[in-house]
Length: 80
Image (cartoon, rainbow, N blue to C red; front, side, top):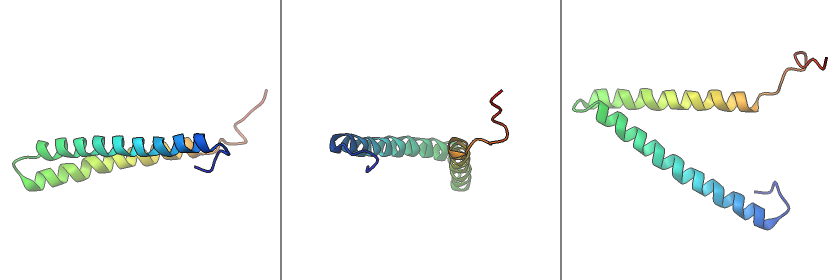
């Protein structure tokens, strides 16, 4: 939260991170519960669906983070 010199803005950013974490945990738990219930009554199928579903979500997150942080190509930025 040191990206700003204003202590009040830093406090807002810190509170925002906690809120985002709580929401992410709630959504993740809900998705996990749905995936486990889809595989019921088989414990093996429930575990497989949970592993596959959370793996797909993690892969989408990695791809999104890569796209968001990648630098634009200098050669493709044609000013004309």
